[in-house]
Amino acid sequence: NVAMEEEIGGAVQEMWTKGGGREGYEEIGRNEIARDPVLRLYLRSDEAEGAIRSAPQERLRDREGENEIVMDESECRTMRERGTSTTWRARDLACRLHKWHHFTAAAATDASLKKTRDGRLASFGGWEGVQPKEGDDDAQETRAQIHERIGRGIWGGALPGSWEIVDAEMYAIYSFLRTKADETET
Figure 1 (cartoon, rainbow, N blue to C red):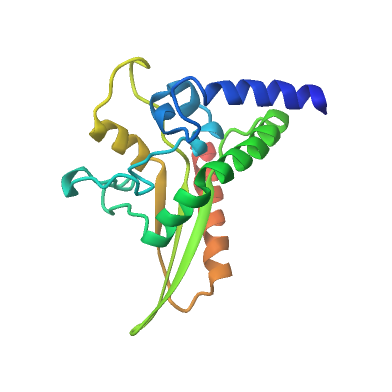
Figure 2: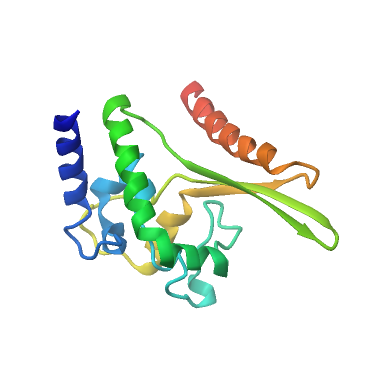
């Protein structure tokens, strides 16, 4: 549908070109993006992606504040090489689906299986995007406040090492759906 493509493409493209570069790092403070469950998945942080290394006390932490969030070197390299184009393509498709279905929640899920000398380590995680600012949309934020909003969108945990990667991937999806179902029951 050409009309829908023009409407979505123009509106979404405009949201990502007001603050600066094509990568979208400058848009992290835009609360109108962060309030949308789909659009906020695509807000990017140069610190989270490893382009900037923070001092230990300023590093990103998950929503519980217990785990430090760090991309390993191969992930950082992938983001440098393909992050912008991949983000734009994924955002375009997600926004088209969002326009049609009006999602009220969204997440990107992932899992990991690493082999170590002591066995295998399995884990799962999810990204619900940079969470909205609390209070005044136009208020200036400190780096710590931005990090806190990023961290509130990240969750995950360890799984039994006997699990296969597909089990861990499915558990990440299940975890997100279970959380959203629990929220609607309360």
